[in-house]
Each structure stands twice: as C-alpha cells, then as structure tokens.
Length: 165
Image 1: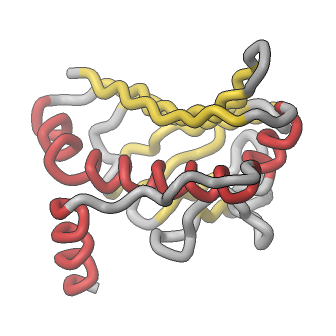
Image 2 (image 1 turned 180 degrees about the vertical axis):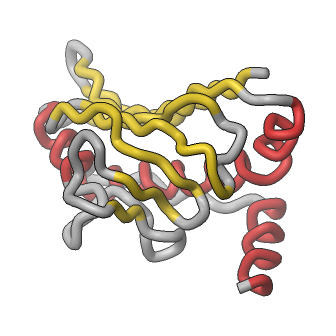
C-alpha cells in the first residue's frame, strides 16, 4: 500500500529566506517546527546526513541535506513509524515569481499500517504540517493568513494522547 501526502505553501520572497526556515529545524532558534503544540523535532547531533532522531514517537534519520534547499528523512522501523518504508522531506521550490515550501511523505506499507496512518497518524500529521506552514507564513509574509484550525477528530486524538501521558 502507498502513502503519499503533500503539504505546501507559496511565498513571495527570495528562496534563500524560505531556506533559512529549513536550516533552523531542530535548533534552539527553530522558526518552522510548531514545537509549542507538538513534540519538538530533535536529533542526536546538529542537522546533517546521518543525524538520528524525530519528533515524539515518529523516529527517523536525515538521509539528505542541502542547506537552504532540502532536508530528507528516512523512517526508522520503530515506534509509530514502524511499518513505514519510505521518507519524508521539506524542500524549497523556486517558481518564476514565488517560492513554494513543500513537505512530502512518500512511503510504502502494509494494510495495517496504512489503516493506522489514515485513521490516526495522518490526521495528526496533517494538522502538524499546517501549523508548521502557518509558522512559515508568520515568518515570511507581511500579512499572514488566518492560522489553520484543528478539526474535531484531531482535537479528540490529542485529548486521548494527553490522557495517556
């Protein structure tokens, strides 16, 4: 089974400005990751190929890093990423008059993991990524759009998770 998930936002700034957000990931000056409402992204070493870490129960390693342009992560077969055979990445995509900040999940999995993704992990992932893109919007836009709102299912899942902690 296949999981292919894309989130992106267009900005009217220089690609280098968007790239600084990717470069700030997992640092104390992280301006992209929505760490106020979600588990922070952490690695065992500063971001670079081979760094191991993740966010909360999603575990991965950095497989590619082109400063200011792209960072890719390969899922480790453990915790909530167990059963996901693939990767996710942020990239800066220049256009003629704008630049796109994109996040992609591209993974193969069995039926059980696919169902778990669509019922639980995917909705939380989608909310987290929209929050991250809202952070980018606040950083890069003169007039940021209204922040995304979590749907009822995401709020319910978060409440269950907070009770388990």
